Length: 159
Image (tube, rainbow, N blue to C red; front, side, top):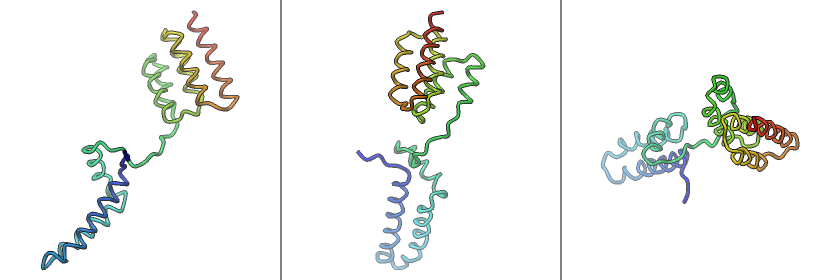
């Protein structure tokens, strides 16, 4: 099944409105007066910035995905804040969000393993995080940092 995005819906909507604006003058005597606002609406649909409120409503009703596949910038400050305040479970969730969007950086994997050890998670879960990191990280430096963090997590877990 094709995953529709906002851009697809905008273009489909614009095509339908332009088609309707083209056909109405042939159906109605003073149809050209009705077709002018429809041409304006079709032109507005082609301008992405002006259609965000309408496409947001369409997304809410139809359950479609947003049009932009851009990744948010890498920001670990919230997770670090949670660690600083002792909210370790929330920090682990925040690191998981960062890993979802940016799987190629090593720091979230490293910090998550250490936090899992601090929260008393089973060793199996820490090892799963190591395997997940190894799957996504390719550089030797990142893998070495991952192994160091794994050793530190196991030492912390043993305490």
